[in-house]
Amino acid sequence: MKVFYTKVALNAYLDAQKKNKQIGFVPTMGALHEGHLSLLKKCNEENDISVVSIFVNPTQFDNLADLVKYPKTFQKDTKLLESAQCDVLFAPDIKEIYAENITSTSFDFEGLEHEMEGKFRTGHFDGVGTVVKRLFEIVAPNKAYFGEKDFQQLQIVKKMTEKQQLPVEVKGCEIYRAENGLAMSSRNSRLTEAQRNAAPFIFKTLQKAKMKFGVETPNAIIEWVEKEFEKQSLLTLEYFTIADEKTLKNISSKKEKTQYRAFIAVFAGEIRLIDNIQI
Ligand code: PAF
Image 1 (cartoon, rainbow, N blue to C red):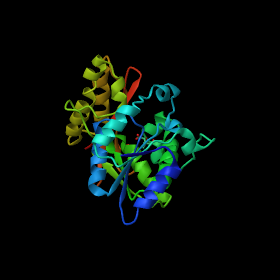
Image 2: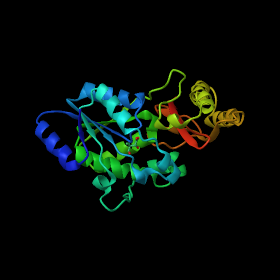
Image 3: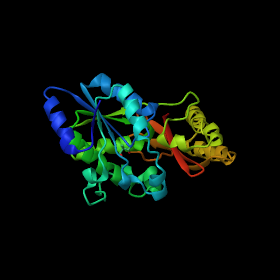
C-alpha cells in the first residue's frame, strides 16, 4: 500500500496510474472498523485502484469535545488497510485540505440538510459537503463509497455531487452490524462495557418499529419508541422519526410507491449513536 500525505504526491502517483484504470474512493475519518472494511471490499471489487483517505474533518464537528475525543488510531488503521488490500492511503494534514482557512462553504442541499441530524448538528452537513467536495477534486475517483449508517449524509453527498456536476458515482453500502445488531461506528470504541451491552437495544427497537409500520400509524410508532426508551437507564433518545427516503421529510401517513426509513439518534452517556432501517 502506498501512503501519501500531500495532494502533489498523491496526484503524481494517480496520474501515472490512471490510464484506463477505474479509481474507487472510500473517504474516512480513521478509527477504522469492519464497516469501513466492508466499503473497501466493495471498492476493491468494482475498481482497479482503491484509495482510502483518513482525515478528521474539523468543520463537520458541531461539538468541540467530540472532535477532541474522536478516536485516533493511525498505526492500527494503516495495518488494517494494508491487510484489506487497500492500494493507496491518503492522509493529508489540515493545511493540505483547508490551507489557512478552516471554514466550510454554505451549500443548498434542497432541504435535505434541515431534517433530522441537521436539526441537532448545526453546520455539520456544510462541513461534510466542503470536505467531500475537496477530496473528490483531489482524488478524482470514478466511484466513491459511503455507508448507509449515515443515510442522510449519503443522500446529501449524492445531491452535492449532482448539483456541482462532479463526475463521481456515489454508491451507498449496507450498514455493517455486530452480531448483536449494533451498527459499527468509530464512536462505539468509546462506550463503557455497560453502555455496549445496552446499545443493541437501538437496533432491536428499529426492527420492532419496522414490524409495527405495517399496522400502526407513524405517530403511534414514534410514541411507542419514546416510551420504550424511557425505560432505558443508559440510553437517552434524541429523536426517532419515520421519513420518506428521498426527501427525508417525516411523514404522518403512508403513500403508495414511496420508500420509507426509520431514523434514530440516541445518547449513551455523552456518546451519540445513530442508526436507521428501511421499513
Ligand atoms: O462519514 C465520515 O466518516 C465522514 O463524514 C466523511 C464522509 C469521511 C467526511 O469527513
